[in-house]
Length: 582
Image (cartoon, rainbow, N blue to C red; front, top):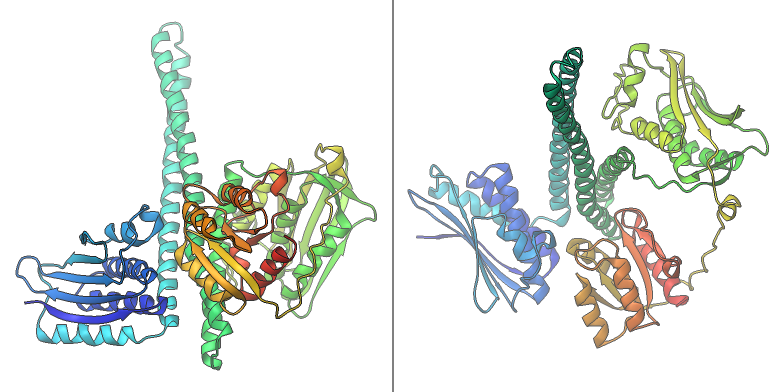
């Protein structure tokens, strides 16, 4: 006989978060391991979110005892048929089907049954079932902040697993390099017998070629893995940042505000690590786009000083020194990132004295130097700081930690710019990092420097946005954007792919469309062109978890928002500017 553990109604995304938490608690009480608890909770969340999108839904979770196959069962009855298109990356039913043992959808499309087989040894006595019911009720009344905290912990655990996999890839590369050295030694030995063993040498040559291809493929697979996984991790982290921003704007007491701040800071830290992984993968693969232009070194230094000064400890002086009129033709964005990385490290490990950023000509090169009077680095560990995930032990400041990715990225970026990055240091006295860069060839118009475009002033505060269309395949993040716009837009419509967006626009034009860049099928820039063709008067804004994509000349002026920096104020201001200038 089945026992009901939870019966509830889903009316909003808050109910879906509560259902996710209840599913995890039920799984824990019934003896599922942590991964299966997360799978069950996520499957319930995906189906629940799809059901809420139709209006409302009724959920009943039961457990059926059996000496052979005790089973956890969840029945979701929605107010309208559920969407079934897409694949697992879209979420909803396709994703849920991959997470449980079975998922059955009634022919009418409104009723879904999910089942998860429990272990044969699962104890389903009255005390266990009563505890499961209590946990489900308690979890279902918990607030969204608790669930966000749990999801953040899941993300951190996933990142730890990613780090372990990265170390395993490193170990495999080392083994491949050792194998390759052995093959080369064999090749040297056989070469001395070339006239007698020509056939063998030819065969060995083919083997070496194959090994080289395997090494190249392994390295490319590693870089591709980092790029893909880093991007997929940024999507949920941006949702957490958006939800934390919404919570911060609500009426919270002092402790709740502090807790939301902790969530935001943790998500920011995770996003920084993911971005560093993605930057490193791009640099290793040689995918850095170098755009040379004439750079005023003194002007660049002043900008870097302004962004670094808030990080400097009391008692430490930050100085910048550059000869007047010194210029360098290089990629300003990439050089700025390298120097900012070096300056951040310098101020992080300097308690007294100074940090100095200087520049001087050196033959055909320009030498940019970051010098500090900090802790210093032992000589036997100086080169290792340029290796991924390596951090020098720091007994004097054990709380100062990093990812071990900044300096490896800085060196690879320096090489992409045709330069070098070297270091010298004395423990207890400080460190000096020297970046030597050549001037790169550049087109005449680019040598004049970037032209500053001053954005139009936003309309007066308090004006209401018109009809806003949000297009994003990340359903949680789309929900966050809708919540941010609730008080400032006359109407907000949501589409999760290009075909849905165009269908909505055929029914009626939107005043402004906010488009995600990276979507399955038709991407944001392609959709943007179709929106303009359909309704030329619709203003458009692009957004993405990654950098701004390259666009054709006719779309170059389209505003762009980084998801990690979007909060209510930034979002509304950008849409108002776009709507005012259409």
